[in-house]
Image 1 (cartoon, helix red, strand yellow):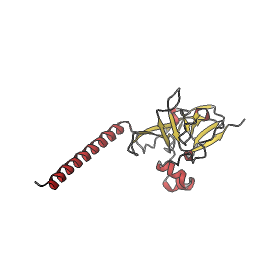
Image 2 (tube, helix red, strand yellow):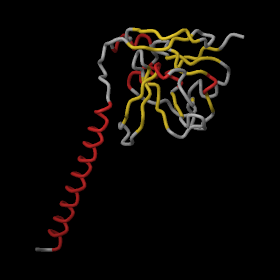
Image 3 (spheres, rainbow, N blue to C red):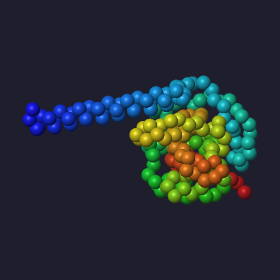
Length: 194
């Protein structure tokens, strides 16, 4: 067997083995995530905690999910807002209007007005996106495993309308140790009236 054929055989076998390993790892990861996944098209009602614009807790409410087709969302949202909230895109770092917002108030879902975060949980993470150490109520956001960028992350979505908000990471400040890294294009800031 000549040298070129031998090298080609070894290279081909190594490539096939590496590809097989990659496919196997991907299948294992997807299977692990599928066990915890909630059905995306669950039309059932959801329970959230409602808050007044002054931050007062109004109680737990059962609401129908907000469902709109693509053209309805496009009429309601700007192209950037649509890409971020409906297609899980990310705005450029330091480009969002709410990154440097430090006034007291509430952050609502831009798509459905669900209250998501309180300004008291906001901190400067230095990442270029609005960051919070906790959601205002666990019921108001839902988390989903995300492997879309080839890295395991936890996506954060609005419970009511399934809008993509951003991701949560375990590198935030105490007491939660979490960093909810959100897109300004997914949030509506409501300042507290003095």
